Length: 458
Ligand code: TYD
Ligand code: MG
Image (cartoon, rainbow, N blue to C red; front, side, top):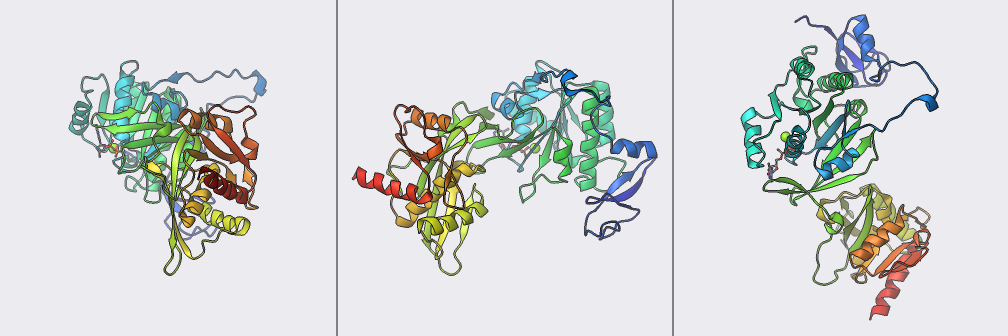
């Protein structure tokens, strides 16, 4: 096959250079040149063309908009982060650590899909036997799913064109390589080129494609950030290696809401949807222990109760601040707010924070629970029994409301919690049966109210 010449494009300014250089000749940035195909004029124009079909400009109101038809994967907790299912012509990227269950879930989903639509599984990582073995283990060996083991992009594109499946999986994008480029599979140039080509074909032939992506040590999808821009949906597989729970979170979705969460349990026979996940992330203590606060977090459409644990202990040398499942920067900020606005000092203390069950919490409404867990551990006094907390803490020590407070409170009441400390603005208009809700406006108030509750309980 005729090989196109390669050029090196700067990821910052787009300048090109015939050979690799450490510094971009255009903008002077370092280490930004990456290999790319120098195509004929028409082809290079195609590269920068939008992936949407060409259309005349027309008034927005006149464009007929249909809700994209959803192809359900047959797995409810997978459909949820996808926004209801796959979309014809839509490309989803699913990232996660090795061994977390990406291939398992996709094999399960594709098997279910193959009962209704034509489905093709392209595996670049495992041999046909390995995939068949896994299918047998999952008890889904007799499926109509088609399998292709291939890593050559051109051959894959040709097969997609001739087979015309409705749904295809590429496991994984890092194993593919295009003949157009000299660089190794998994390199930035290859990953970008392969993803772009596959996406273009998906739009052309209205195939729903799911790409599997590896995650680097830093937790980002390996390969360029542009991968996330190319595709329509980005999902992350999360979970603690030591627990059987797995979460799928949507971080980008052109066809639906983000931050929807799918919850699974890894079992002997593959991933199973978890029906009622709200109480999964609570550890069952015999008695109340200092340093534990129960947070109601809202993940997409569902409230989840998560136990936040804090350990505050005398520091020897530089005090350490460590978080698992929560933002470390946010912890530093909360410690400063606690000191400044509530007079609670931890500067000579190590502070460790953990979200139970491998949960990762990104919403700021976790602040108040983290703060109260820290105070509880520092004073070595457990928080009152059956108490839940949520609310964002601002730099001025104010407690800001969290979205969908009512739903959070109702879920907590349903699970048997009887007390809540929440932002004043989240106070329910009508009392919620079974739960006694207190509104707080400042961080100091929250700490004081905990003390009151404790004294009242004695
Ligand atoms: P896998 O889907 O291969 O992960 P990925 O594709 O994300 O790298 O997951 C493999 C892990 O899942 C492996 O450690 C074993 C476990 N597993 C089960 O616990 N039960 C099962 O039924 C299967 C198929 C795998
Ligand atoms: Mg795999």
